[in-house]
Amino acid sequence: MYDHKKYIEKNKRRQSKIRLPTIDELSLMFNKETGKPVIEGFTSSYYWSSTILVNGAGNAWYVSFSTGGTYYSYSKTHNYYVRCVEETENGIVWLSSTDVKMNWYEAIKYAESLNE
Image 1 (tube, helix red, strand yellow):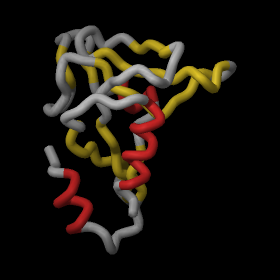
Image 2 (image 1 turned 90 degrees about the horizontal axis):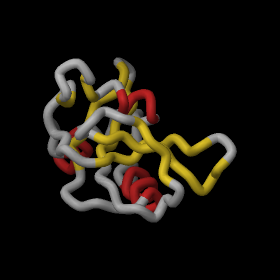
Image 3 (image 1 turned 60 degrees about the vertical axis):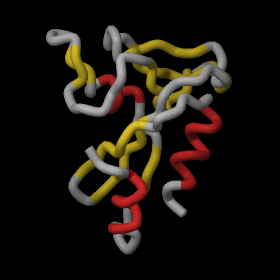
Image 4 (image 1 turned 90 degrees about the vertical axis):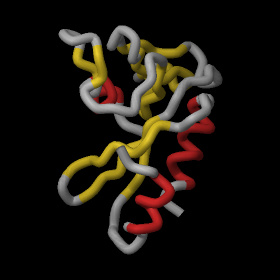
């Protein structure tokens, strides 16, 4: 697991983008057979994805790391955890989870701020 602040400082010269994961990327991080996350660093809670509901721009998808279920929120103002990914030449790298919950709008701004 990476300390996102140190990782970003170390790799500032590289061309990459930090963002929220898509619902597909995020849901792949939970193994429904074992009932556990595929990698460490997820708590047994909800995590925002970047994916919005097709006919509902006010709704966004999230994953439960208690059950592995994918759901959409009727409101982007609910507070869930955030775990950003960095797009690299070799795929995506999972950064550490936030210690605080935030709404979807704050999560998007948070991910964008890591690119500055």
